[in-house]
Image 1 (cartoon, rainbow, N blue to C red):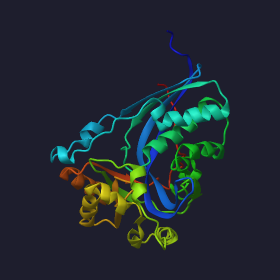
Image 2 (image 1 turned 120 degrees about the vertical axis):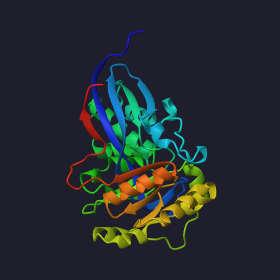
Image 3 (image 1 turned 180 degrees about the vertical axis):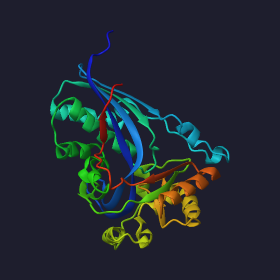
Image 4 (image 1 turned 90 degrees about the vertical axis):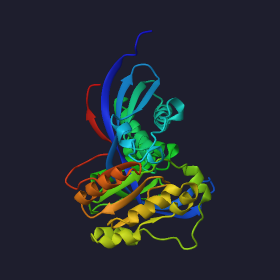
Length: 329
């Protein structure tokens, strides 16, 4: 059988995210939760190699980036060595679902081939799958010459996953931060926010988002994100005291690693620390990039899973999400 012909190819780099604030406001009739969350994109990227096909089909392959296996190894034995999850393919992958939904909505007969090289840990609360789906929508929109706006793509994104619209919002041209409401699809992009530096660790085990949400309770008096946003804008280190993640307590019931990470980070000089999303990744805000690098090296040497040093998008760069460059495959 002849290989499908191609007419264009692009490379897409798409970032992870952290939840600096995550509060639950109510349980919705559709089964989701009404949330208020402050999310920021960080400079840990997955990469998608995307090619248009003349035949109307979706081809998808995935692999972990070179070096991830070595990064996941622990000096303290199997108990603390991080595992790299098996990556779903075909219709089980949110990337496949995203482009198929776009194809149906656009009524196009064009095809697409996507190869995902992952560096963002899975089942970690870092939004890697959602980010990949957003990147695939942007790539397909360009390769299929649909001419859809980000707002139109965001409507499709909201049908695929609650975090996907965040990665399509224009906030990456500014600080990389946004307040997300509803079930996550209502985006308020923020400007004038500072660059932050983080150390983050993905423990050896992941967590199921539905299970964590299933154990949570709605607070009688929910916290507001505004004090954290205002404190960050003023550049005050007091912001670390205002971090909130209402999912951290229920996550601790499923994995002892969350409490271990909390105890570990409490012994550091981080401004503040907490779990991201529904877990299991845990992060600390550092005063400088140098502090983040040094702390990441210490935690990595102690063998507590996958550990990264990361930052928000620099103010000096104009970045779109996903970041796209034309390149041969």
